[in-house]
Length: 226
Image (cartoon, rainbow, N blue to C red; front, side, top):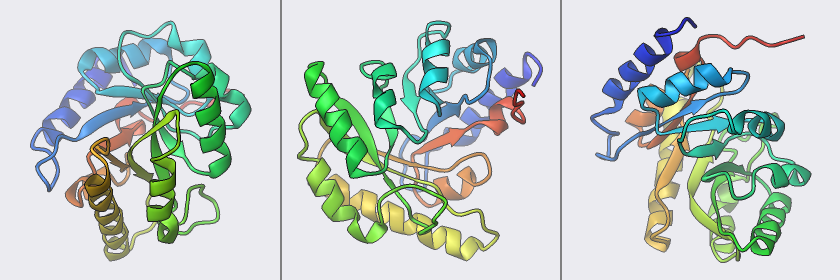
């Protein structure tokens, strides 16, 4: 996407989101920066996104020092041996999707004297191709991870299925919102429901998401090397 277009699209999104979600909450605009150049990401930061998010630890490591000040998030599947690239530099991990990762992140955070803020990833569509905890176990998982030293649970993340069935998508989004509302009664730290990407963020915001992860809508189609 040409210079200036990124700025324009971020400003359009911020204008679209300025009224908040259906519950009157601010909607946090997180730019998903996978494969984007540092210059492109910096244009989005300068335009006013609330945070920038990488999918791959090595890409974060290589790009991080080149970026303007802005909260850094991580939204990809995280292998435990790659935590070292991120620890102490990530403001919010969106994809805590399994106990193995939670335990490793807890252990390494404690060794560094840190508390890492996480979102619990829920596989709301019960899709084999996606990670995340089962929805039916979400309350137990939340209660357990919320008591894990070195971690602070700030809410949930979910990816809706790629489906044209709007009624299904809305019902799943509402289930996530109900879970989020329950968690808020359990902990004052719960603040974020990260749900919605370029293709479905409008629906998710209507159903109560307050954080969206947007890539192609800001930057245009990804360009992969090789």
